[in-house]
Amino acid sequence: FPLHKARLSQQSDRLMLDSGHSQREEEWVKYPNGERRLFDTRKTPLVGKNNQLKGIIGISRDLSYRQHKEEALEAQADRDTLLISISRQLIDQDLEAAIEFILHILGEFTQSDRAYIIHYSVCQREWSMTAEWCNHNNPHISSLIQDSQNISIDTAPWFSSQLLQGKSIVITG
Image (cartoon, rainbow, N blue to C red; front, side, top):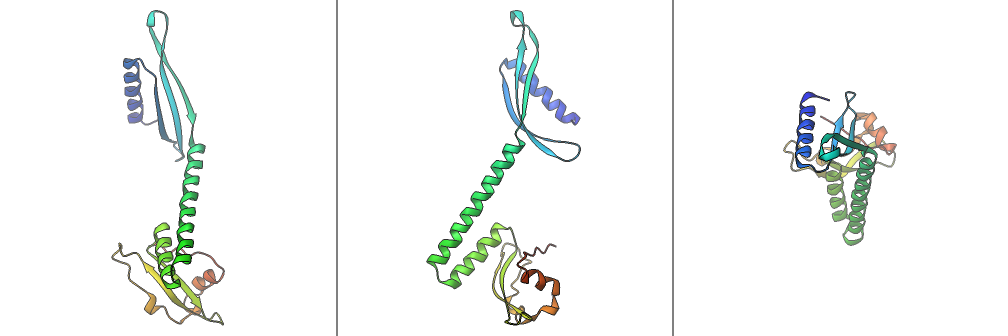
């Protein structure tokens, strides 16, 4: 452990010993290989005859697996909430308003700057953007829908190939 972590642990132990009471804490520990693990640690003073301090008893449990499971459950709950919201919009709103809402909520959920729907021509040689949501909190993002009409798939073959295969595309930078 780094020196500053060791000193913090010593201070914590000293406070626990001075109080005479057990102490419990959860702490993330980062290993030299970069792995992070969550530990639940309970420490208590070890006293002998005549309440003479002998040392500290400590027990640690690795809670990382439990933490990852809790995070996975939270993510699933977020996805479920998203799908319920989308379903409600499709039931309660006209299609155009529902599409606008769905693109917005999906863009925010995925922390994207843009979400859109692309329609391919019958022969799948051209595509057009039919709906778009832009993150207005990012001043560098502006609408592309007007410039994204009747675009030949030869303009961006990889992009078109990915979409026609039903794959998501993440553009960074």
